[in-house]
Image 1: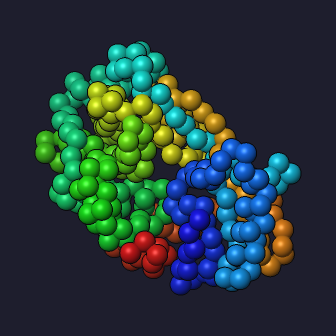
Image 2 (image 1 turned 60 degrees about the horizontal axis):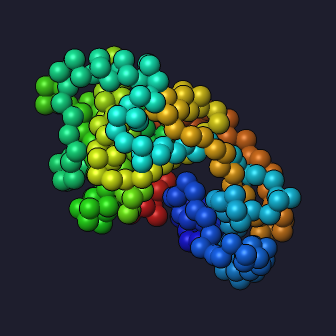
Length: 284
């Protein structure tokens, strides 16, 4: 668990910060209730406003989920050919269309690819109504993960212009799909599908065993459908949040507010980047 102290909110503890899912590093027979009791003590001592658990296995059975997401996992051990046969017919058609469109796709790890990804990322975040993370955040990812062989970027180009990119992290034989971005003006070319196809093919050929697609909000059926279309298995990811002031576990929180999304969609890219730098100071 990591403590966060952003400038706009009080300190809190999150398990593990910025990870979609984090199971406890304990023996299976270990009493997880002792862990949660100790966390309550630590939260009081350190002045955390709350702490958040992001794992089924450590959440007590009678504790309500504060948030729930879909998680998707793809078993890569069956090999590239079997994987392709498990793709939905719409995915297979989209990949063939992208390949016929003359797009080029490559696996890259250099700072140039990261710069092209970030331009698309800013555009995509604005379209989704949320500010982008600071550029420095991705510079650090490039420096400490991508350059160290712990990740890669799939870049799709049309006439040498980047129109889609996807970022993956990997450790051992497991990989995580962390970020995807694209130019929506060329969506009909299906570059996003080509990027994911190339990543899955590459990971399978490199001997990876599993790909985690990250979490998906339950209110986002389109993204859920996209991830399922690659033959992924689905599970529910429940989070639990303990409020220190009320000494109680929080019930489900409403995430349906759309005002901020309308605001960030209306802002120019430069102001969105500034907002991201202010909102995500702990990412620097």
